[in-house]
Amino acid sequence: MTDQLSSSAEETAPQVGIGWRHPHYSELLERRPPLGFLEVHSENFFAAGGAALAVLEQARTHYPLSLHGVGLSLGAVAGVDGWHLDQLERLVQRMEPLRVSDHASFARGRFNGATVHAADLLPIPFNQQALDVLCANVQRVQDRLKRRFMVENLSSYLSWKSLPEELPLSEPGFLSALAKRTGCALLVDVNNIYVNALNAQIAGAAGDPLQHCLNWLDAIAPADVGEIHLAGHCHVNDVHGDIVIDDHGSRVCGPVWRIYQHAVARFGAVPALIEWDTDVPALDVLLDEAARARALSPSAAEVTA
Image 1: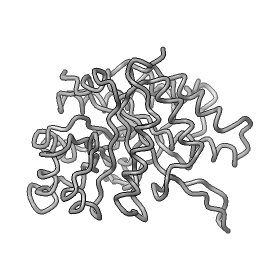
Image 2: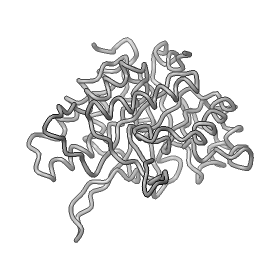
Image 3: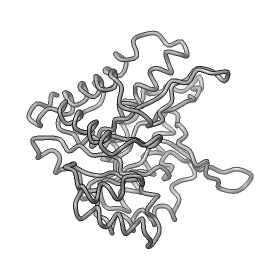
Image 4: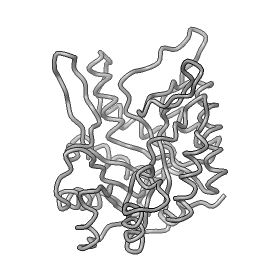
């Protein structure tokens, strides 16, 4: 299996990129600001041709690419959709990205005798059965793409109740077991960790959310981490309830920057991404966030065990 992540370990400074969205297609290609890479949503470029794919072809002549998916449904008992995997393989072969990723979630399942897709990132239980399913699906993807794949931790808004006979795993323990069994890399979204910790606090969990996030990171082996995501979130308190949502619609907040500092102190010069998907601001705002991430990152020599 070709390891597409090895180049980042050889650098003395981290790659920092931005999520490249439609409002910035033209401006970024005109200005070509210094960035480590661009990340796009894989599914937006599944068409065999057209304007979107042509723009991505232009971008890859100036920047390395990272393909980030939202629809593989890696945790589905129904398995990975063959058509979806076909399109992803074709896109990977055409664009030759640095990294390819999706989420530790499910969306596909059987309903009334048919396979349906929820078009959402639904959480999976952290138990042995779910781990077996996830490992099998991730291994299928890696075997097909012939490369190391990355799996991202999820921001989740519901949780599974364990059966009395089950011994549930912690989320970092679950993901570490996935990496060990399949050889995949982990895409650590530090904002997702914080959002989950805040929602747990709202639900009555004891302890400091920030410290929970730092402990989460300490439970992950540095060698397993292939990329870090940074994003903004919002707190909604209305007639429907009180919840924190990972909306990717604002600047990275202070506590998440603190968690990121801890992550890079532990993991070293891991590629980092600024995600912004709603209320997309001017390109300079994303570049400013990327510059801050770069300034907070250590050199590869400073990685700690």
